[in-house]
Length: 358
Image (cartoon, rainbow, N blue to C red; front, side):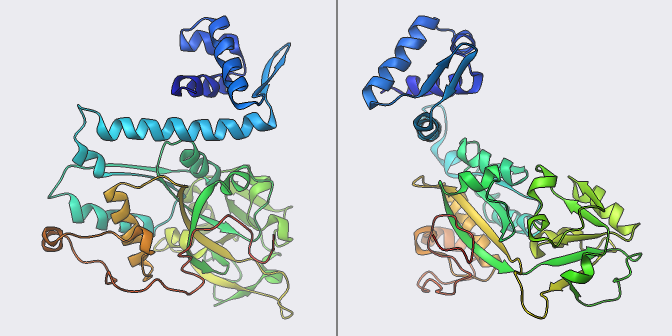
């Protein structure tokens, strides 16, 4: 197996055609076909199904493609880190992450920036995307870190849900559900609200994915599907809420994006019998088995510090004597034990919906 062959697999899967892939790769079609057949023979699997109108991946091929992308991404990272014309120290200072729109993220980014910007070169790459986009950016090797919210009300059919099991996941925080509203909403003066009351309202939905299918609470029967307005930006949704009687279900970490806009945010309480009440989790994740840069470790340490959680031992950043005189200290001492509290999620684990056993 050669890296070039894996790149061929990735390109063919993207094009859905060996002919088109050969043209884009600037190789002959017979040569490309031969290379793929050699790879299939080497591993004893069939990667592609040849059809009259193109090709498609077999089930084994889909798994093979995932690992091929991981290997190519890791090789690319290795090349970048140790290329002769690339300063190693600059690579150590790389921070690349994808996230949903979360207000606290920029405080943590700013803290990381302030810790390093006067003493070294650096390269930050921050991408805002929906959950599918965040997950895809990680799996494709575009970024190293992902941050997003998931809920017990999420659909198992979501594209990002299916891919999540392939990532190393850590839970930062857990919380209930909140409702965001403007002064025109009849519940504006309330300090809390029940799902039953919220169901009577017009609903705004802040969801950049396939909104009608992916909305957090649609599947739980807590959503008035006959009176709904979908948005894909916080600014548009905020303006609509401010000048209408509509409400928005949200997690507390995304609700912070609306603070200072004139909107009110109150908790949603379960029914008297408890019922099937959704909860949210804030997660950070990465590709399993791949190391992070020193600056990415620093960001992770700051992230745990923001939520007042001890840093998992495997991500605790060792600080040299020189660095201690340069950088502000982290909120937790290096010898502090990992928290056993379930919300800390210090141990990486496969993705699973809370309350549902395997």
